[in-house]
Image (cartoon, rainbow over all chains, first blue to last red; front, side, top):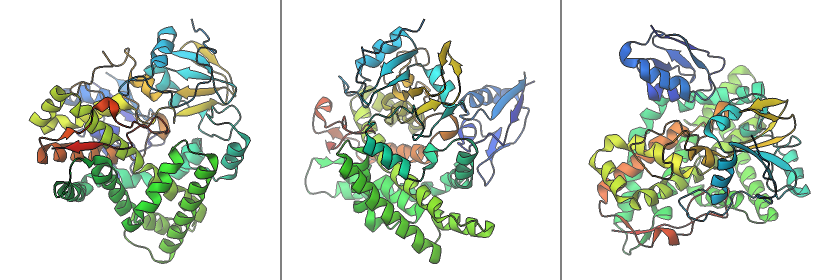
Length: 65
Length: 407
């Protein structure tokens, strides 16, 4: 199963992840990424993977599939 | 193998004149066919690495070993005369020119203002603004009308004014100064425009420090006061950046987007048939025009290997966002405007920690404008052939000076 990691120190608040898969990614009031789940279900996995490639500051990574 | 093409592009000057207003300069394609990374000579003297490839460009922009500080030796400047350099070195740096921890400290306090959720709350107000200016357009006695003046410029100007707490009555003043700063006018003109705008913003921030309102700058001031770190110069730099970057760019994308869609009626028909396609169409238009080409330049602070090429500390790198957005390795048939492409991975807003702070605001404005304009004026058409429009070949940010339309 896919596992996502978000590094809040690297995050620059571009919101690309939230636009791509709002079922997995959210932003706090401070703009920093917040994971709604670190195990995206099958429905969200492809979009979550896309979000990882779009993240401009490489704050997102896939730990395991 | 990377071939040096210094000589072929001797005197590289951005923006390079385009042959066709809808396509990158043909020199870009020649360079890319040789290699994703080439060395080019600049008119200002010296050489720089020219990044044509999408993957290579993203790698540079996300890599902390490349600096955004224009004041550093080796940074690829296009007008490297002594006066410009001196002016550059005497100015406090904008967020765009900061690196690492300094950049992060400047950007972090502001990103909360641009979250997807906060921007969604602005949607109804932006819709009102767009409707208001389209009402005015429809009430115009004469046609054609210039879409730049009636819609493209006023919408983002009013939106950024409201967000920042800048009186909209001053828009003529700051628009004319911003335009002069990004046009390749004389150095004196640019310096005067810069100084006048900076003085205006300094005064505005001073007023907000004593009479706060409900706006972004007032919130930043309150936040800094709370921490006991009121930094007037830093606030002025931030205000300068947000105000100047916040309207001219979006205005150009509105105009070019309308030209692009009206020139590709089959693509426009797809958007009109289903507004659900608009967000994707916006991404494609952003990819296709990449209006801020060359703004994303860097200088290496240590030796780096990118795409098999060794870049040495102190060497300049120009990431061409336009070339990257037309890289066939990343976008199949890049010369085709295809609103259903799925072009989210374009780098029109840059990449890395400096990626445009206002990108999601720009996206929302573009979506609302295109949806509303073509719904309310379905017979909208260009009043001059697209290729005869006055394209901004004389400015750092691409666009059109005028856009006559009728219906």
